[in-house]
Image (cartoon, rainbow, N blue to C red; front, side):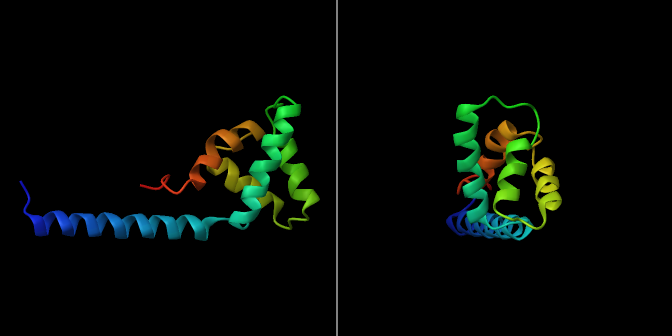
Length: 103
């Protein structure tokens, strides 16, 4: 059984690793966190009206509407993170933005 100092040291290492992972995640974002939140809200609303057609049609609509210049980079990032269609962007990517998502 580790002593108190070892337990604290392990907690500190875990905290530092979590902070590093969060920073790396933030630095990997091709658009701002705020824009992603707006995208998730947009998709949530639109997918309440329409079924997902297994494409990024609605995502593309949002990116064009907000005049995002690096649309292909954003779509590539989404796909690299499990968002191959609009509903997967909500189901897989949105949860990555939760505070407790990065262990």
